[in-house]
Length: 290
Image (cartoon, rainbow, N blue to C red; front, top):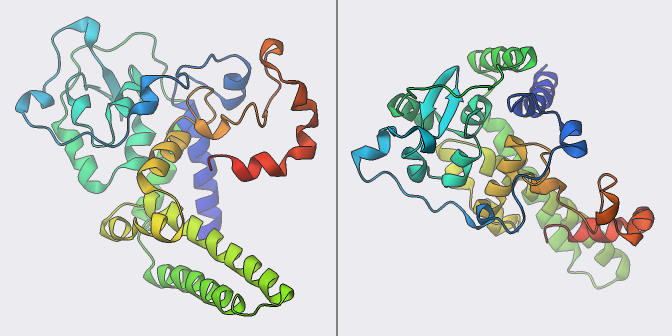
């Protein structure tokens, strides 16, 4: 029952994170949507460097309509024109949702403490025109997520956490022990076992960086100590993937060309080796985001 509900929730989240933004769907983005953020954009230079607000004006809106930055959360429009600079994850996250609905991202990426801060944000005095209402799929997802929260599905299972860490430790230990033998079969077996260990470490790091609460905060360094990935870099990139799934020019997880083309590009941007990418697929896949 748990696995079925979580799988359904994950699939619905990917769909609704897209439906929430102007009725956009992944295939529409591939075929017609122009990139909003180029690779050379200043957005790529931002990382989690913003600090907490230093003055009360941060929590006030702006009186100037032309520079208003309004974001909708739970059918309420907020004016984040000044507060954006205080956002702990950087201003670019706020800028991405100008005149858009950010409900799913707000609930998906923030702790209970962060959600409490929502009450302090200034309400927008005006509402942008032409913003579509959430789709029925989005509204059903919100109800389903609330049901899962109320039923306790998001409570941490400590026995399961111990099993996950124990599995990683067992595979790692077995790989190290096999590596002590100099014969080729044992060295090959060690490489395979250590590969499984590293895969488990990667998924555990994924969960700890995504997670919220004191335990996730404490375990976040596991990512670079045992999984080989920087939590800050990975969090910014991967959260962007979940927030703006498959949007060309924003989601870096689909920015794999010219090594690998996920869809047929515009003829002027095509490469002669694309027709052969099925043959050399393992090489670029092993080097992506290296």
